[in-house]
Figure 1 (cartoon, protein in one colour):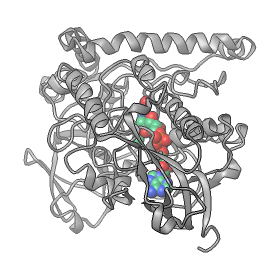
Figure 2: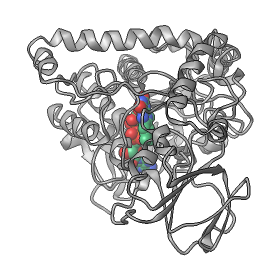
Figure 3: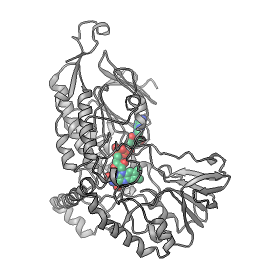
Figure 4: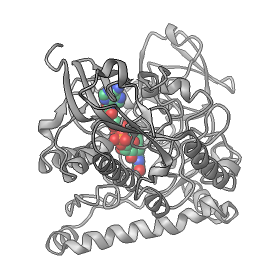
Length: 506
Ligand SMILES: Cc1cc2nc3c(=O)[nH]c(=O)nc-3n(C[C@H](O)[C@H](O)[C@H](O)COP(=O)(O)OP(=O)(O)OC[C@H]3O[C@@H](n4cnc5c(N)ncnc54)[C@H](O)[C@@H]3O)c2cc1C
């Protein structure tokens, strides 16, 4: 506990998924080596460490879902499985010499801005430290959400969430309830359906599902990528370009998405012959409003005789699970594929800013940041994948890398300003940025498509998705515009800092 007490670093990075590891690489490239990466778990990987459920894989092709500065010519499949992405992140950690910076089993419990010393005091489960700046990369989808189901505590069997899969529990021959029909659930269903005796799928809202064009990447392709590295870049460029073009339909012309719905209906029609089941599985909202899912095995699994698709889970009575449509089933295990705390970012409860308020209190009316990174009243605190940086159709790594550009410039600006200095996002700049984002959001399929999704917060505001192309976001985050920040300085060091170092806002 006392090991790291009173330690001070230039930067504390929280989290070691793509965001945290990317930040670490970027800091080193900027010549900053005085930093730590605080990770609550015992290894790197974030999403791809925690989600080890059967069938877990990426929905974005591997050559795009990877760092541009660490291309991998050896991706084995067009869409990688969890274990390959996790191995990739371990490899990145080694190749970029990040191990000395990592602090595992260090859960950040609280970060408090010290307005006199202009630094963050950080309490972790392995000791305390302080930092000039914090990069919070705790993940948009890292805290599992379990719905509040009446009677769940009376269930005598096994219960777990998709992101906390219990590999010691053998599902073979069991009667299993799968709750949810989102991205994780549709990967789990085909993987477990052949093993279990009965699978009851609790569906609140059906998803639009397109075929997944997955295939092994041949030895010849891999050899080509290894010998001619530009071919890896070319492949990535093509994958990126197609998605950049597609996004216009989501953001500006949702009406054009009708033909994509036809493709999804055909995908369903190929496997689901029962008209009643087909009707139950057909969404009544515009495709894209909720995340479009990719699977060529989901519908064939649902058509199997040991699967029932029923309404959302409404109640548990002992070992009986009850659907909203009144269906009852006796089960041995309940698996929740019910997503994550997204619009109520859990770390926000633990960050205490300049005015003594937590970020969660400051965001009580909904998450708001400046360019997806900074929050007013929280100087020198940046988040990776902050508000409105999510994507509906492309790779989050593109957004993360844009945010790392912003981080790098932020650190450069602090150096140029010199001395003990902090940047605090101006409330007017935060308001202006959010106004622009929300104005653009009005036309998007996420707001107009007629669905309720995890992209929207309690008040129905979309605080998660970026309503544009990834290149637009890259342009918006290339540089830190100092006019959007108040520069907070401490008074000269030789004076009594406890009395005079009150932080002067320039
Ligand atoms: C099942 C699944 C599939 C996905 N598929 C795709 C996809 O196909 N395409 C796509 O673009 N995106 C996908 N995503 C989104 C994915 O989360 C992002 O692409 C990306 O991996 C996020 O990286 P991150 O580093 O921001 O967060 P994470 O990978 O979640 O990492 C956050 C890290 O922070 C740590 N942490 C959290 N709180 C604390 C704390 N208080 N103290 C210390 N450490 C803490 C966590 O343990 C974790 O290691 C998927 C997500 C899930 C869950």
